[in-house]
Image 1 (cartoon, rainbow, N blue to C red):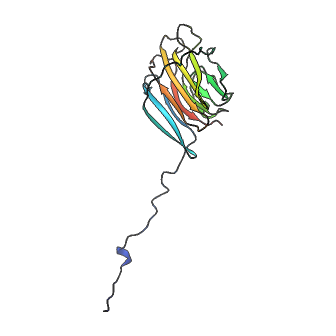
Image 2 (cartoon, rainbow, N blue to C red):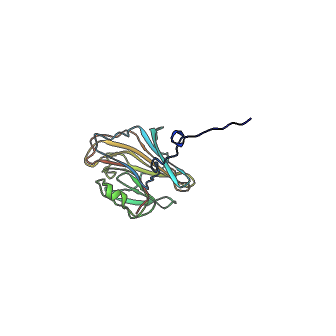
Length: 199
């Protein structure tokens, strides 16, 4: 009834640290592409808040139309204005911000995007809703705490190319989406799509 076992530690499994893992998180997410490379037509970028993180995904958009019974915003070229009851601001060049003070510049720039005073969602390029031959920008609040801005056929600056965009922001739970409909490749400036928390 006596037995024994011998272990050679050189032949046993060892626990080893293989680095720190993929634990880096970023406050902002963006894509900056030329007109010809802009690859989001027909797609929706979605931000879903999970705890303190936002999970960003991209897939086919369901499509959108202008909500009935609302007038276009009186936005000029390279301007912004406060809208609705949620403290949001709409920029003529394709953005929705959670507060005032963000740039109305027509040329999307990454450093500028990352250093604005207010959190914002961008489908930023040089658009001109003051050109009455094209479409307008609309804003509504489809449910409590949710702001929605729609660029319905707004021409790119000095072009006759209509751009269809919609940005939806739930300011209560911080979920959001940026959806692209048809967009031309004739806009004069690049596109910057993304989210930045401001500062």
